[in-house]
Image (cartoon, rainbow, N blue to C red; front, side, top):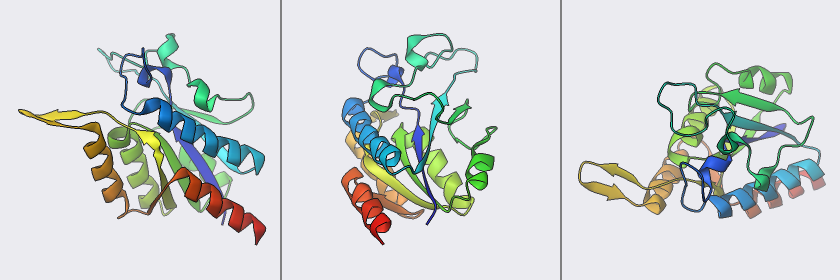
Amino acid sequence: MKTALLIIDIQNDYFPGGKMELEGALSAGLQAGALLQCFREQKVLHVHIQHEARRPGATFFIPGTDGIRIHDTVAHFEGEPIIYKSFPNSFRETDLLDLLKSWEIERVIICGMMTHMCVDATVRAAADFGYQVIVAADACATRALTHGEMTVPAAHVHAALLAAFKSYGQVMTTEEVITMLAAEKAQ
C-alpha cells in the first residue's frame, strides 16, 4: 500500500523555551524522529508540514523567528518536501492533497503537534479525502486546556483525541508503525 508520513508542526515554539510549550514535546519529537528515520531508510515518501502564523495578534510561529523553525528532532533535509500552512487543517489552502495524489498515496501515517488542533484537523480531513489513516500516538503532543473553571490535563486531552481518532483510522505506537512497515516491506 502506497504510504506517506505527515510530520505536522514539530517546531521550536512547542519545545522548552518556546512560546507555546507542550507537555511531552521532546519525547514526541524523538518518536517522530524515529519514524522519519525509518521512512528515510526505507525510501518511503514523507512530507514536513510547517505552520506559519499569519493572523493578526498571533503569539507563536511568527515568520522570521527561531520558534517557527522545524525542531532538530525531525530536522528537514534539503530536497525533502515541505508544506507551509496557516490553518490547523494541513490540507486547507495548501498543496498537500495535490502532492499526495501525485504520489498516488493510499495511506497516511500522521505524527505531530498539537494533538487537539492541527493533528486532529488533519486526521479528520485525511479520512474525509479517503485516505487510510494511522496516528502514531507517542509521536504527538498537546497541552492542558481550560473550559470555564475546569482544567483538563494534557494527558487527558491527548487520550480523548486518540480515542476519537479510532473512528477515523488506527492509533498505533511508533514501534508498532515501524514493525508494520518492516513486515510490509518483507512481503
